[in-house]
Figure: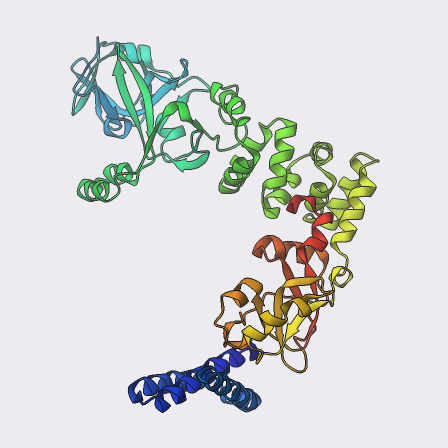
Length: 74
Length: 416
């Protein structure tokens, strides 16, 4: 897998994870579970040798996504 | 006067039918000879095959008395009077037309003839239409039910009037001194070089050469520009050097350079010496340019962003990001080491959700050039993909520059 594809999957995974957290906070457990499944699906497609390399990218993406969600809510 | 059960029938339906001279059975119908009589060819003779050891018969249409569902009756009894071979240059429907490729002058396509429709009018028999439908092929193979089913499924399968078709000779020299090749020559001049190039690419080598040799020099030159490089090489190889040089002289400098660049170097050099001495240096210069390093045409003034950048921020900062840049229609997504991860078209950026990261919306399968690519490689890539710019990568896939189409099109008028 090319690094670009791994970055894209990590970015999509972070978007699903952020959405799952948001839905859970809003009390939508079913929607949150659906988003978490999509999140795991994206992460699962990334080969293990690339996961380490983009681990911090995923965490940065997730932090920014949650920040944007919270600011949007405010 | 001839009697027939149907006024219209297909040639495949009567081939092989028993032939009687009055009441004596003398053989089977083997072929049908046609002659040009204006727009639609007329049947002039039937060729009758006889048992082994007996010569074939050439029976004039005027001697045919009856074509029934099972037999053909000739109104004569003197068999020996018809022992003859068809004259040279005759067009035989079975031997020369059935299952052969035909140039459909209406659609400018090459088709295979599966049958020919014959029509009786004023006691004369005409070859009125050729049938390209698989339906007719299946009928000839005896698969009537399948043919009927197919006809229901594909009612659009076609037959066209003979006036829109021309047989393509299998090789040069076939139909010697014949009418059809002359007709072909007259009509083929009406076909646009782009369409003719498509036709030539579909033909086999002999047919392709036969058709190409019929073209007027100007038309041949225009057509040669349009065919794919493989066919260009083949046609140039088949022409004598002076003719090839004459065709190249009729092209623009850029087109001549494109053609010569597709040839083996020794052949190209040989032709360069034969073309107009005033033109040759300009063409040579363009060929040399084709081999130039793409880096000479590249820019390092392009927009690059990290994958974590948010679409909204990039759009908000776009005016600032694009300032002084040569390539502004794409945002290249790179990691901290400038490894190219993906590319985002400015339209995709505008269409994206405002909170999406570039990594989410980028195309990660990027078409790119390697550092050692030539201008010719870049032009081929632009022609193939129609991108407005292409990134150039080093051996570690790090982006080192971008070449834009607008920077190279000035030296390749053919791509305008």
